[in-house]
Image 1: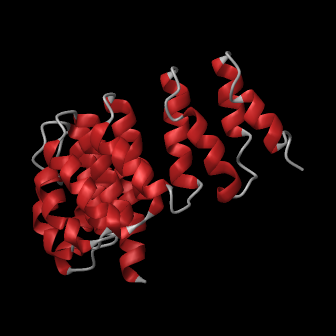
Image 2: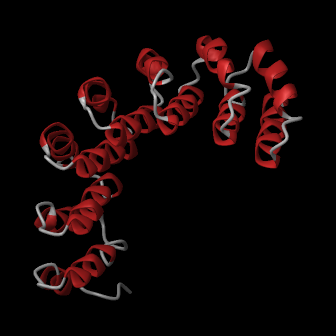
Length: 221
């Protein structure tokens, strides 16, 4: 049985204590999307950023027809870049192909790297090969985390044509970049991937080496 009834959650979402509101949002987990979304909407404009962020994330998990337009509007118009990034991430969770264009626009037009990072991750979640052009652009980002997201996403969308582009990161100084590369190559079956993974399997960093070995096994299957 849920720990709080819907009526209790609704009442708690009106509490002046932000901790109560956060607990109320978390308490929606066992309820259906249709039951949860109307209550989540109550705090989408909450004065506390952490509450808003949790509510936006929840719209990506508790999915109804209402969620998509709400998240797109937040992505495109919210003044807080953290909320725009949360909205991008939630759109990725929806796995709705309609999110492709809004996420591409966010990547190209938003000036905050966190939003661009979140958009790149979400494009990978959509698993839409059309994202390849945007993600190749993301590889040129000055922010390492955006490059990591782009490499991972190119693997998720199965962009075999992009293998030569991501192989430029095989000797990158950041081991997380090399790990993401190894993981991505496991989703991109071709001779270049096999050769690069054999090289990465000997990497000095154990996480990179392990990721490469797992990817080689995956390709072998």
